[in-house]
Length: 393
Image (tube, rainbow, N blue to C red; front, side, top):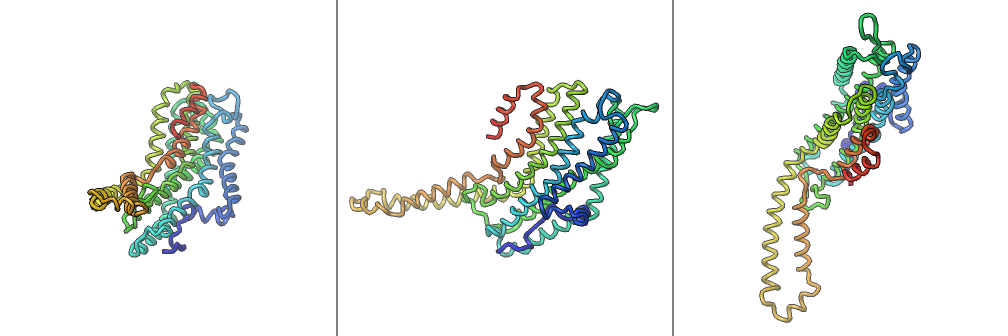
C-alpha cells in the first residue's frame, strides 16, 4: 500500500480557531508564521496585564502582597506556556503525521484493513473540525477561570489582579483582563491540545483493532510498532508547558507565602507520574495484541526449535563418522541453529507496550526541568542535575 493523502492527519488543523489563523495569515504553513502567532497570543495575554498593572500601581512596590512583575506564574503561563502551546503545532503534529504514514509505508496493514484505516482517519478529521467541540472547550476555559478567580478572591491575599476594597477583595483592571482574556486563552490552548490527544488516542485504539502484519521477531522489540513511541515522545513539549506553569505557582507559594519545599514533593512526584501515564496511555490499546503475539511466537519458536534441534542432533551429533566432520565445515545447518536462537530471543524480548527509555526520558526531563530552580532553593544545583542524569540515562 503506497501512502496517499487519505492516510494523512493534520492534527494542528480544524475547527474555528484554525479558520481564524488562516484568515489572519497566522496559519502554520511556515514556521515563521507560527512564531508570529505565538508572539501575538503571548503579547495579547501578557502586555495588557503589564500596562494595566503599571497604570494602577500594582506592577511593583508594596501596595499589594504580590505585584505583577514578581508573579512568576504570569511569566510561566502567558509568555512561556502560551508560546509552547502554539509551537507544539510544529513540535507534535508533524511527528504524529509521520507515525501515521508509517503504517502503510511499512506494509503493516492487511489489504482488507486499508479501507478501515482510511475511515478511522476520516472520523478523526471530522472530530478535529467540530465547531461544537471548540465552543465547549472555550466554555470550559471560562468556567475554569471563574472558579480560579473566585478562589483567589476568597483567600484574602491581595495581588495585582485581586486588590483590597471597601467590600473585600475585588478584581483590578488588570484582573479583569486576566479573567476575561489571558487565563481563558491559556486554558483554551491547553484544552485544545488535550482534545487533540484524545482524538489521537481514539485513532490509535481503532488502528489497534485492525488486521495488522506484526512480526514478533522484529528488531525493534515491538513487533514493528516501535515507531509509535516516537510520536508519543513529542508530547514532551506539552508536559513542559504544564510543568512550567505548576513550577511557577509552587515558587510563588514558596517565596511569598512561606510554604515549605518539602510539602511540594508529593505534588511534583504525582505530576511526573501523571504526565508519563497520560502520554503513554494511548499505546496501551496495542498491549493485548502484542502480549498475545508474544505468547504465540514463543510457542511457535519453541516447537520449531525442538524439531530443528532434534534433526540437527540426529544428523551431526549421533556418533557422526569422521567424514562428516569435514562436511560440517561451511554447512548452513549450524547457522540456521543460530538464526532460530536469535528469533526466539527477539520474540522473548517483545514488549507488550511499544515504549522504551528514549520515549520516557524526554517526558521525565520536560516534567522535572522547570522544577530545578524551585528545588535549587533547598538542594545544591549540582546534586539536582546529577539526579536528573541518573533518571534519564
